[in-house]
Length: 426
Picture 1 (cartoon, rainbow, N blue to C red):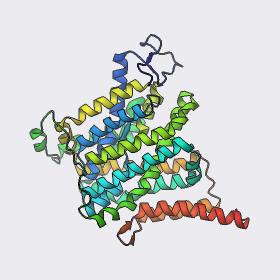
Picture 2: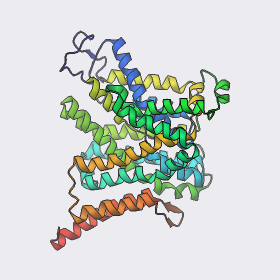
Picture 3: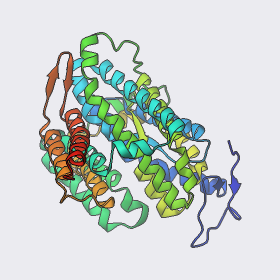
Picture 4: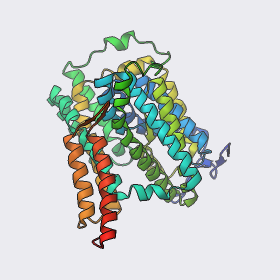
């Protein structure tokens, strides 16, 4: 692994067109500052997932840091990325916890991680071309979109718990994106939570009693998934809800790698796709065993790199290490846990909508032709199934709207395409 990094120029200055490559770094004070910036960028989204799923925030932060370091090791220090909490897990975790308990949700996370790691090994051996065949843009866009829109009822439930707090939070998120330039504008979710939280404190909606009791330093709440088989039928029954998450994580990782390759001007980065999938899979498994949320590569941190033109993996070592330290502060976790429902309702109204729009963006960026009946049916049917949250019971297995919508998107596209080619009606 190419350590240590080569100093970029003098390490203290960057020209207007300079790019700091993954194998380079600036001076350590500047690198540490950039690492802290990456922590701020990932923090708003990463801590929201455990809050929304009932998992310990400190544990999730701890494993996001550990996962990031593991990712850097497996990708040989050549692919800059932060592994934060994946929003694709929210709906299946909520469904699993409600029907079969936390152990089943952790088991689902572990299974997703294992499958993603296996896909990574396959890609290392065979290349990633088959992923594009299985999930063309119309399919991958539909899957990402329906996951976001499927969560709309959860956002509404939190919003109605404290409408004025939620409205202030939502307004702050929206306005922040256009009021501020640079990094602050990219952190609209984080800033919105801070402003909403201040409003909630003013309205008397925040209870600080647990924060005072928590220690400054201590181990996270490791909910080891030692016994997810308390109710074997229920545990395996929730797995269909988790399986579509594998496809989303594949799409997110591939998109991240292509983005980095384009920004750095180094197409050889694409050769790391298999290693990235393997690393994210192992990180997700590790988080599941320890009681944390599953991980994925973070677009927020791509935004930071695009703004700074610094792609040094040294900054990510700093970010991962600092996240581990944050996870070792129970007081930080207790403080995060005080965020009330109204704040969550406001921020998730925007956030879940944005997840859905990312799916639409996949269609736009890839110029998906919706005048074609195959694309119309693939996206239309999948979205309705996901948004309405269709449910199908098959023995011990329960397929929710996300699982059924994902299956529908893949099956409809490939079956219609095969028949159209056979009949000459494409």
